[in-house]
Length: 511
Ligand code: MSP
Image (cartoon, rainbow, N blue to C red):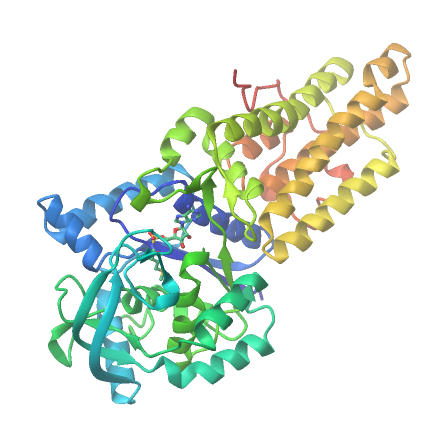
C-alpha cells in the first residue's frame, strides 16, 4: 500500500498581488509534493487564500468594491500565477467557500460547548497588516517588528480560545518530538519568547469587523482571521463536512496516523503554527502534523521584500524573462530554509547563466552533439562505465534522497548541480575528441554512454523542479519520465540503445 503524504502552504492574503516571497513557499511545497509522488506516495497538496479580516475589508473599500468582488478578482490572479508557475496543488482552498465557513462555525461551537472558548474583553494593540494581536515582544520603537507599521489600539468584547490550557502539552510535545519543528532556532525562539513566557489565551472573535465568518452563538461577532485561516488545513480535507458520503474521506486518508503531514510557512508566522495550531488540534482531539517547517525570508540587500514595504518582485515578470524552470530552480536551490536568502537582479542573472545555460543546458547539448558525431546518435552498448564516475552518480542519487527526505530541498538540488558541473569537467578531462581521433572506440563508447546516463539521471532528479526542461531533455534522449524510478535510475543500462534526437538549446544564455 502506498503511504500517504499531506503538504500545505500558508493560505495567502489576497490583499495585493503575490510576490517572489509567496512564490518561494509555494514552489518549495510543490517540489516536495512532486518528489514524494515520484517516490511512490499518495500525495495531497493544499494551498489557497485567506480572504476575511480587517485588511481585506479596508482594501475592498478603497477600491470601491464589496469584499467578495475584490477577493474574487485577486484570487483569479493568484490562480493564474500558480498555473504559470506549474504548481500542482490538489486543492485550492478559499476561506469564503461555504464548506469552509460552515466547518469553522462547527469548530467554534464544538470548542465553545466544551468550555474551551469563553467570553471576555480585549484591550491592547493590534497590527492590521499582520492581522495580529501584539504583545510588547512584537513591538520595536512603536511599530510592529514584522511589517514595521504602527499598530492600532483595540478595545472590544471578544471570545477567547483557552490556549493556556494546552501550554504544558505543547511544551512536552516539542520536547519529546525533536523533529516536530524545524529549524531548531525557530523552535527555541517560540519556546522562549511566547510559550514559556507571555502566553495568554487567544482572542478569536472580533465585534468590530463585519467581513468574517459569523458565529452561531452571538450575532455581533465574526471569527478572527487566524482562527478561520488555520482551520483551512482541516477544512481542505472536508473535516466535519459529512454532506457527501460518496466522496473519498480525505480526513481518513490524509489526517490518519500513518500519513506524513508537512506544513510549510514563513518564520514570521511561527507562533500561530507552533502554538495556536497544535492547541486547536489537541482541543479537537486530532493528531499533530509530522513536521512544521518555518523558512526564512527572501530579502533585498537592504531589507525584506513585502507588500507593506512596497518593494516586491513580480514572479510573472521574472518568468517572462527567464522561464519558470529558471525561477523554480533559483528559489529552491539558492535559498535554504535556515537562513534568509538575498535576491537581486544581478544574482538571478548570474545564477541563470552559470547554472542553467552554461552547466545543465550545456552538458546536454555537448553530449547530444558528440553522440551524433561519433555514434550516429545511437547510445552504444558497453559492458561497463568508468567506475569512479558511476560511483559518484550513485552517491549523488543517495545524497539527493537523504536531503529530500529531510525536506532539505536546497541541498538536495545542490548535489545534483554539483554532479552536472563534475560531468562537464569529466568531458574536459577525458577528452572524447582525442579518443575519437585515436580511434579508441571502446573508451569512447564507455564515455558517451556514461555521459548520456548522467544526463538522464540529472533530468530525473531535477524533474520536480525543472518541469519543462527535464521533459524536453529526456525526450531528446528518447526516454519517458514515467518509465524512470528510483529503482531503475541507478543502472546505467537504461540508456543503452536509445536513439538521441537532434540537440535543442534548453536554456538560452542571457547577455
Ligand atoms: N494569511 C496568512 C497565513 C495564514 S496560514 C493559516 C499570511 N498570509 S501572507 O499573504 O502574508 O503570506 C505569508 C507567507 O508568504 C509567509 O509565511 C511566507 O510563507 C510567504 N512570504 C511572504 N513574504 C516572504 C518573503 N519575503 N520571503 C519568503 N517568504 C515570504 O500570513
